[in-house]
Length: 138
Image (cartoon, rainbow, N blue to C red; front, top):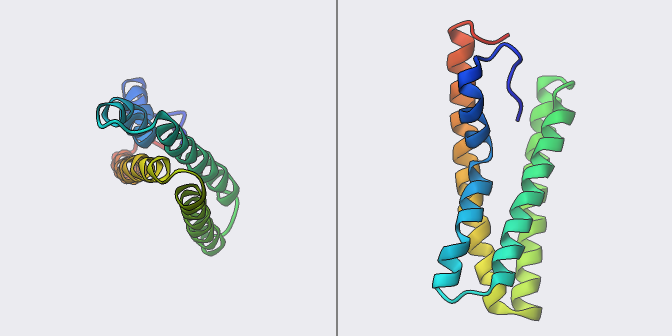
């Protein structure tokens, strides 16, 4: 997510933190995983899947910017569902074929990060709407 060039300088660090909230939460979940005796490999898989999902969302957002609203919503929706199914499949395969504990740990880390990522996106949208209504952005 990017900041409009006319956004006030003092909001840029806040925008960055809100934009990366899910990644921050997933990163900070490592001590919890370790204290609970969970595998570091599970944490790494969950964090990696969240990071890949986050990058995928950025790519889709960039692609959707030049499209009509209907096309942009359609692409975003299909991408969101496809990424969720792909990640769920990876987590199931890991849990069933390789290491159940690592798969479940990865799922927990991913879900925590994903939840906070959605929260951050919602906050960012609200912040941008407020700024737009106040005439601070284009």
